[in-house]
Amino acid sequence: MTMSEQTPETTAVAGSVAETAPAEFVQTPSQTVGPFFGYALPYDDGGDIVNRVHPVAIRVHGRVFDGAGVGVPDALIELWQPDEFGRISDELGSRERDGYTFTGFGRTPTTRAGDYTFTTVKPGAVGGADSSAPAYALVTVFARGLLYHLFTRVYFIDEATLSDQAAFDELVEADALLKSVDPGRRATLIAVADGADSYRFDIHLQGESETVFLDFD
Amino acid sequence: MPNETPTAPHIASQSTISAEIAAISAQAKAATAAGAPPELQARRDYPPYRSSTLRHPTHALVKADPEEIERTSPAFGHTDVDDYEADLTVQHSGEPLGERIIVTGKVLDGEGRPVRNQLLEIWQANASGRYVHKRDQHPAPLDPNFTGVGRVITGDDGSYRLVTIKPGAYPWKNHTNAWRPAHIHFSLFGTAFTQRLVTQMYFPGDPLFALDPIYQSVVDPAAQQRMVSQYDHDVSVPEWAIGYRWNIVLTGPKQTWMEQDDDHE
Image (cartoon, rainbow over all chains, first blue to last red; front, side):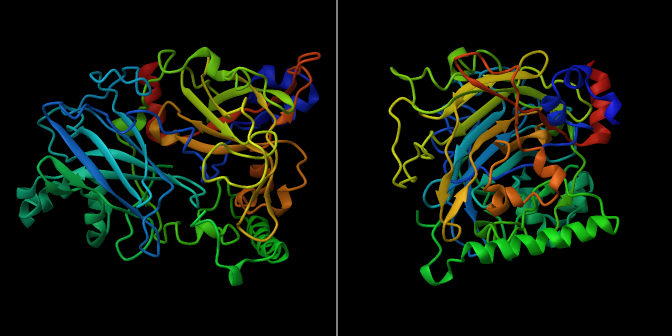
């Protein structure tokens, strides 16, 4: 795309404005969310993608750690996922929840300890139940000190598969991302069952078990 | 501010920070001169911004092909946001103090197409440079008539328009005598979740740009300009408000995204 292809209206107006128009629609740079988003971005029930009494509700929780192994108290976590049948929602109402409509989006700040919790459903595989690829939710991490947010995925893999090397290998083979990740780091993408209907997914920004973060560009 | 304040002996002076910024800029400039593509984004590891030291990933990011969930985005609409939320000056019983401004522009994708009906959120300090957030305890007055939080859903042409107060410069503790240039935080959703963006809009000609490690973490001068709004006299309203224009471009995974787009249009 060249200068001449930019929208005519941005070039037609006063000189000062033409200079602001993106010459080639180049992406706007990211800046940190900073320390003071707490009164602006979180909202009531933001972490409750489904209600706790939903028949297949699960808890997805964890701690965000910095490079010194300390919990990050000023991070914001977002989750975006299909429902339990692998359907992607186009329903409005992520900010004004009615307690019933599944919108697939959740947002929650970490606590003073660096912990976060979502109530949601285990995502189904998009494209139908017979898909052999493992299901996951997309996770986005914002924090003071992070100049550009981080994307990762939280995979939900049943324990039978996790404890059977052949079955696990087969599953990895069916997932382009897991397959491409250094085998020693794959575990950082997989939620750990830690109780009835509860999964733990810690996020390590640095350190020995640094989470695999993704580049979609 | 427990994690914001480095212990006393380690607090750098502005001249130390400025020297670090200058060294990184010079290195980036030399790389571009030698043929490297300009860096469009903020560096995740930017030592002059001390808080980035323990929080940036040390491994290279893993390339991922976005799948369907990542090529879509949550749907937001007028049921999620009230119209008055776009005007930060009418949220209390009285008028906030400070310079009333209008901030308007368009949210576009990498092809210049409007990002329609998406959620745009802002937050900012008041005219005195003070945030409502409890952890901001610096001695500048709060304004009982200003919270500093706004939301709007973009129009069919990707446009947004906000009325607010020009924020003051904000002191922080990255180093001695550290001041953030006046800025408004923006949070945006695109048509794909991979286009998600949180950034800051700055005001033209701020003398603090050169000294600020967050602004300077975007090392390419042309990329820095993409974070700076422009005064626009056509946006100003007589005897009422000063106007600024700022367009935002959200790009995502180009290859697969193009295919998707054909399906939907």
